[in-house]
Length: 213
Image 1 (cartoon, helix red, strand yellow):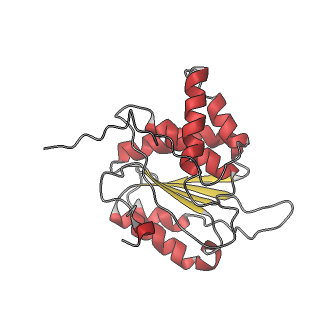
Image 2 (cartoon, one colour):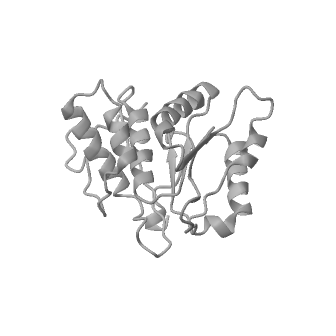
């Protein structure tokens, strides 16, 4: 027997954010590219995205902290557009490192990688989009080249790019990403990081961690 979770009449469908994300150039560029969306739909997406990011950590707070949450959407309800917009808003709000677990199949991974890359193509000077090439024999080994940003880089002209990494939801791939982060832990400990799991119904993060469970 399956359980149906109905959110249509929920009073906290869009919970109040804990902080207020700013709408920056990347987020606005993504919204402006959605030509098939009506103004009402754009406003809804804007409200939802700011609500979701506003429930994540505040990247402007000095103390190290973490938070986990879940957003539920209907099938074919625009979830890819939702988390792509979330990526853009996070980049505008001082998140340096974004990991997208973009599916358990190469076809889904490619779809998400293409979508995100297309939306960020005008920001190549400041954002590096990483995804493995499924046509290569060893996909996991490619993750060794995943760049970890230097959040403390204060150079004037050649600042470290922010990284968006789109990865297969497979333990080998996740472990390899973790190994790269561990190898670069002196950089990683200063990062504001966001992990987006596109298939949170399958072996996902513990969203009761804040309740110490």
